[in-house]
Each structure stands twice: as structure tokens, then as C-alpha cells.
Length: 158
Image (cartoon, rainbow, N blue to C red):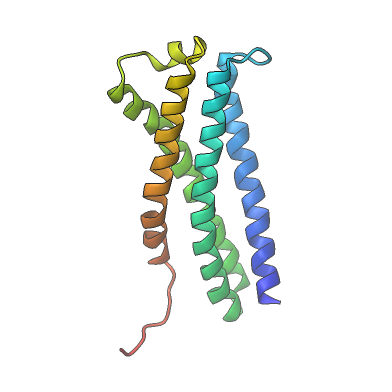
């Protein structure tokens, strides 16, 4: 029963996480055009969703551990609150990483990013996308280790 509740919490929060992340990103990318959006913009949009998904996978593992701990102790409320806090924190981190990647990309190139995306510079969009996804793979695991320190696991005598 604990595993089923854990799965339901993670599934529900994962769907909400991706839905609202994609919705926020879609509204950001609307300024590049709705129907005739350049392929470079679409590539960057997809890379941002992939990056957020990488972050989601890492925080879901940590949330699952927290859920098992709290659910086995009968603390259903704490289980949900910790999961919600982890998912919300990682969601905000994903948005922050997306905007920070513009800064990193601007330091690596001399072009103006928004102009290059409007001009459908696919190479530029791929570079930015790779930077964004790489940042997620590099930063998400240590971030989840920090998140695990907030779970009040019992102290072991050794």
C-alpha cells in the first residue's frame, strides 16, 4: 500500500510539474511567433523541457525515498509536503537554469541570442540546448543530495 501511495504522489506531482513548466515555457516562446515559429526556437523549447525532465527524474528519486520514510512512519501529510516542496524547488531551479543558460550562452558567443533564434540559427539553438541539458545533468544530482539532508532520518549509532 505504501508503494502505491508513493507512486500516486510522484505521478501526480510529476504531471503537474511538466504541465506547468511547459505552459510557462510556451508563454515565453510565444514572442517568437505562434504558428510560424522558427525551428531554432522549437529546438530550444524542446531542450528546455528535456532539461526540466532530467531535473524531475533526479528529484523524483529523492522524493520517493522521503515518501517511503514518512509513509512507513504513518506520516502521510509530511510525505506529501516534502514531495511538494522538492518538486516545487526543482521546478523553480529548472526555470532558473533556463534563464541562466542565456547568460552562459551569451558569454560563449558574440551573437545576440534572440536575434539568432528569430533568424532560425539552428546551430546556435543546438549549442544553447546542449548547454542547458548538460547543466541539468551536472547540477541536479548534487542538488538532490542537498535536498536529502532535509529529511529527518534517525541517527544511527555507528
